[in-house]
Image 1: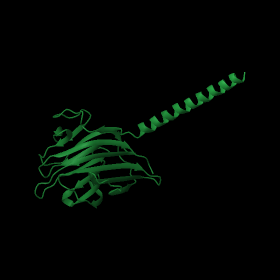
Image 2 (image 1 turned 90 degrees about the vertical axis):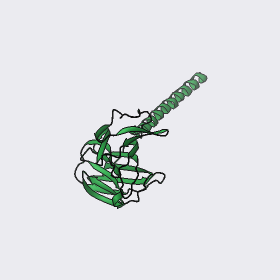
Image 3 (image 1 turned 180 degrees about the vertical axis):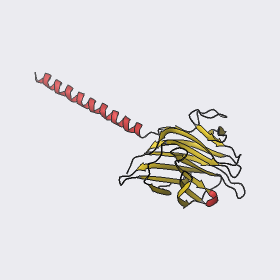
Image 4 (image 1 turned 135 degrees about the vertical axis):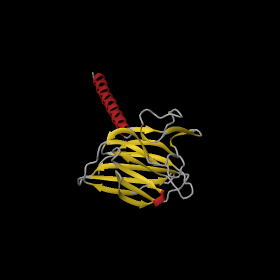
Amino acid sequence: MNKLRLGFRELTQMKTILLCGLLGFACASFAEDASKPVYLNDFEKAEVGKMPEEIMVLGGEFVVKADGTNKVLELPGAPLDSFAAQFGPTEKQGVAVGAKVFGTSKGRRSPTFGVGLGGVSGWKLQVSPGKKAVELLRDAEVKATMGFDWKSGEWTQLRLQIRAIKEGGWKIEGKAWQRGIQAKEWTVSADEKEEPVSGKASVLGSPFAGTPIWFDELRVERCGSK
């Protein structure tokens, strides 16, 4: 009888341990999924010479190109105008966009490029080598600017996010850094009382140097309020 009781207790304990383990695995899996980007494209599965179907081109002859064993999204060096391509889900807050961008200068001319959130009239983080600056814009209006030493022929990492703040309103933050040198602090930021507009994330480019601009590792992630 004691052996039967002991066996029953042991069985109950084993079931409890197994259930806790399963719940822990489920919670861990959920947390892991929550941290994953809601959109990610490094173009390695894309077909050279074409555009991924989920990317919407707003202007310019964007196309996937091969760079050795790597693939990138290329904006040609002509015409000399401003262009954009949108991707990811339609969001207005609690979201961040990231990308890395490669461009080259020619003489005194340099490209301008960036990333955006909230569609065409939303927020943009723009590297403007001609001004030696990183700019934070809402639509076409500059809201914040900071000096930035852009280097021709090197990859530049960009990140822009919009999040609600406890005090009310929203915080828009952006940063740019050369590849391999992580930027821990935000380069530019702005407080906004007006509710952000809904829209897709984007990459932006103006090939004023007459040379191509490359985009890679496009991503959209969730970001929480603080």
